[in-house]
Image (cartoon, rainbow, N blue to C red; front, side, top):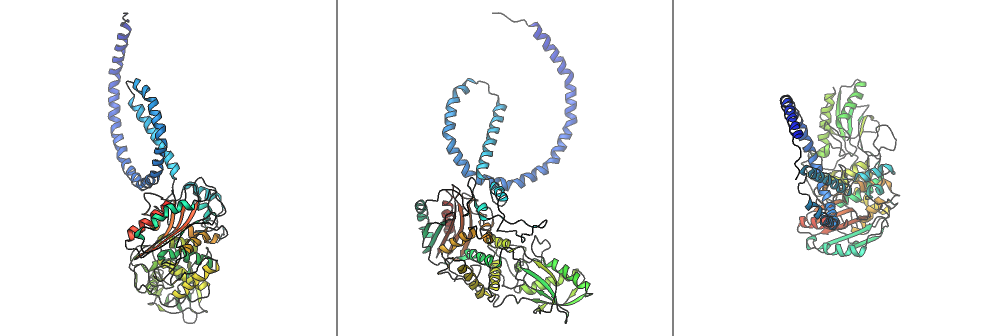
Length: 571
């Protein structure tokens, strides 16, 4: 055995030791100098990091829920390959006796990040409204007709852009839009649907009377039916009919206008209700018609006429008949009047049940008088009146376009808006703007569109009336009509449907499946559970469905069963 020369190694070791001793004080000094700076930087960054983490937490949770089904499929699909890789690499791994832990940790992190990115890509990605961003980008490149946020197509700077048409909104990733609003994919298998839906719809939780209809929006073919022509109580799915009727009668760009008028001979100032329940008295109007703005503009007009004191009245004659819905005083609906602010809510809520003032018009007029006072105009206590044709309009404020109101009505199941839109449909049809006139006008509009209204009975616009009747076939026909490329004015009916797991009345549902793939209007009364909307199939096809159950005894189980039925269409 030859022993190597040790002299050079010893010399090098001495030089290394001397260098280490020389540099050690400098390193210590640098550490002492840097430590306070690092500490201060950490303390400074901590609040921002905390806020970022808190802000990201909901999105991460939603992304995790959305990605979970796809991750499971990825794991199942890759398991055989991973097993083969493990078997092939075991001998090589065994030969590595001293692994470099930090390198393997970094490699695992990189692989995990790549897998996460792949899963996120397969699952969406989603934007804040629950729409896939890839779909949104495709929408931008396609036609911009129908739906919400219209502004008359003026193209004015800062004007809202028209919403996309249904074909673009509803096309799933990987599909190609067709004129029917669906995708170029093989039609869904009706026999397979029956195998899946029949057991679900026979669940005793759905009560003694149930009906269902499923239609392919691409071909118009009915794929499944169970008592589809049987009239049943629809509850809030009635709002789909109200939406189609109102958009058909008035157009998506129509706005509801509240105004002030000055009677030249008497000097009386009249606040004229335009039937806009979204008129707001809140400081932040958030794009709605503002009672404060109306007061400011009115005060400015009065001052130009050197008027500082007025007798204030309010006009609600746009509507007629009873203001109170047949259900009576109820937190789900204010008295229906042509003048109200914030849907006559007595709290800060913007949707859902809430206490309401007994006289919405009087309350709105009193608030308006207070706002006038803030601008130097004194108003008397208000009382009811009617503006004459001789009165001069001083100022106006207008609601968002009807397409946006329809979307709000459907997404949050807004009963006040539904009743208002039924009355405006009556006005457009020359009927009396009361409960009966609104209901009749809705039915007439649907009949004019050639929809299957046989057996349907409307008594209000919201579906709160238990004497309303519709069929599952009518509901799917309404959805198909809204998807028709020849009916772009109806597109808001589809874009306004709540998105499963994300928005409106479906925000807390479908968290374990079909999130983002089902969009549907819910309906619930005592003993009534309904659901109607659209579902995207794995091959990118879009189906319209309607499920109605009457005489249910367990509302939560019935709701869960209907959700499962809708989810089954997406798998």
